[in-house]
Image 1: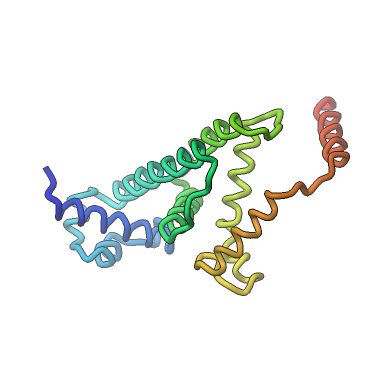
Image 2: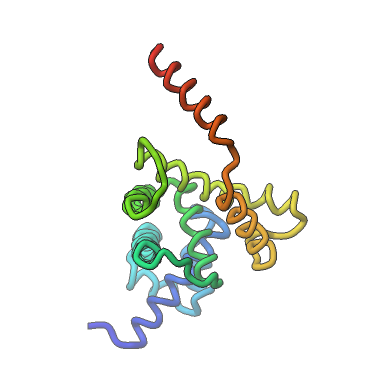
Length: 200
């Protein structure tokens, strides 16, 4: 059975790994660097996680659990939770995990899509394909984080830090708060897609 100090060390290692994996990617973060950032020995890290791959799996599992918790809170309350440094770091880690080809990262995205479908069922949003709607919406939202370097450059401030992050999120809220197409344009576009689909 682990002692309280073991559990604390395990959490410190996980948090340090998430920060370094986010910053450098899986390949760029070494066991030694993670151990040093966590204030533990490489041997203790290996004792808890076995290997860097084991540590990555543990980080992905923890992140998946946390994001699921946040999604469930949003689905149940229809209220956005507070924006905290922890939430920001979690978003950045999940995007990096997907970029690095993590199987759990892909599973997290699939899980997010499923939660998105459940959320859609509780709203008045109209869609002929709830799964595609949830999947594309998730990909569009993640695109902001995938293009954080480009966004930071054109906005003149780092969107990974609070002032720039808030500016980015505020813009996304304003985008989602109002339709970009008129009802007539929407109808024309959908009919054109239907015609094109019928020709395949």
